[in-house]
Image (tube, rainbow, N blue to C red; front, side, top):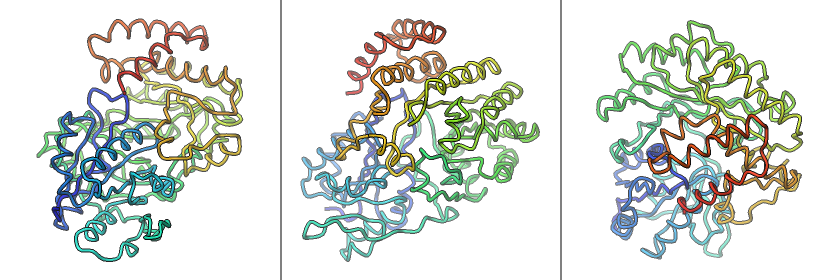
Length: 480
């Protein structure tokens, strides 16, 4: 066995884009391992068709195997990879990390395909685990780890404080082929001080915002530009605009350095509604490409309920700003919250049409179905309203965002929301579907689905959508 190689697996997610996003959650771990003398290898099963053979070649001599995954179908694919690891090297230890494992560590550990769970941020923990597997020692001394002791009892080694991001190293981009990815992710900060009740940040980042220095961000952008010829990046921050002053400094530095990189990131509707013209002109001059905004609802009552701290007027103001400055904004809405009424939904339809009228070029990605995610404040409320918690890791892997299983809704409402998630995608997000997912031989189906979706949206007829059933059948076949 090699005392240097560590194999890190990125599972498929289901329906993949023609080019997926970069595996930043693994790339950020690797510079710490490399500095400590280890040899991390990333196998991204979304883009490497020979991933099974690579696993067979590399895993037998690896120190251990790491797997990351998010709640939903990615868990299903992660478990399939873990099965393959067991078949290749039955005694090889499998370490799980990521948001889902951090939210439900003991349930994750209960699966026989999981040996160790790393909680929350893994940059420091993974190096200590590598040292443990390489040299021996006391596993209990490594913070933020869950494992079974010799008696089969769960051991939790204790909380590890959040990192100071000023110490965060540049990800190991040399370990992947950047041309395989549609988005190259750069993280300038972690966490968010806002309190949206459906968000994982309450637990994972403890509602704290931490950030890199502007000089660190510029260093990484320069590396991506000069070494890997990257022309655009996405800032994968939970809330990039937490400090507008810092954003201003970063944009000014990008212009000063003449990077010529387009960038996209998240933004709040109330921010866009209030930023002054000079600030927005600076964003555009520095290369802003897309701003992703969670509008969530057109109902004031729902916005209050989910603690979003925006108003419907903010959403309208966002659209006025995007029209005035020709900004490209992608915004999404959600339905299915406990206590939501038909009147709330009607208000959301109206607001969607209204902002599309205010800015015909605004991208509305879709109406998403609310999903109770573990570790979020609304999760407990969902359980009290009858949400049946998946009892195993494998059951969480069966969760799909195309299906609505919210028990506080009747059958007709659940079916309607499933149809809406599909219909609004083809009404408002059709340009992205064409550029990111559409292959030439899919085009006749796309044209039919687009026409049907437009007709249904105009008529507000969201039931008996036979075309959605056909499309879902098709999705399940190509993603299996």
